[in-house]
Image 1 (tube, helix red, strand yellow):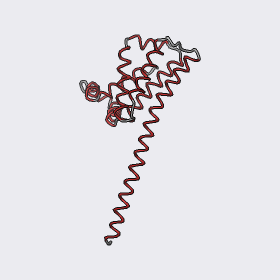
Image 2: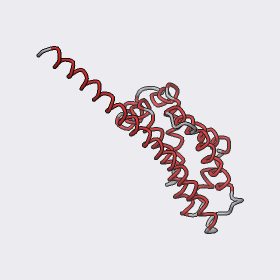
Image 3: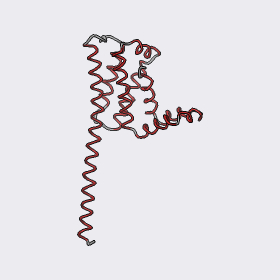
Image 4: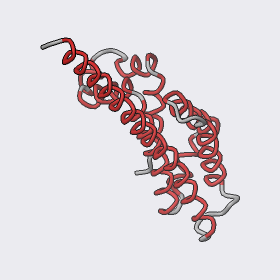
Length: 179
């Protein structure tokens, strides 16, 4: 191989890395936008329930979840990894402010359509968190696959929750999904 061929190989490698980087960036940006617009769709579903008179605008669940969705959307400003994590944490803290034993009861007493929207919101928040945090994804997979081992290790899941706050938030949303 002569110097010209080596130089052309380097140019090809640089061009390939540039194109692949651009495609990866665009793919991530598109994925993040899809997550953000899922929240808009859930808010529209909630509003549809009000318009179709299946849920009152004055209902506790409507006020709470409408506020949670709006705060989560507002938290996602520039579609970054941290903004998604912040949005999920904001939604959890907003729900925790209202969470008493009554929230689970309110969800269980709500009509089927309302429970579906709430479940859709919780599942979407969990998907957003998993898609944007590799460490959370790994922690959830370890927890799924090693549930018996973690229960044998004293405070195994509490350790995960303390070291990874997103794990605790994920589990919170998992517990809110109506059965």
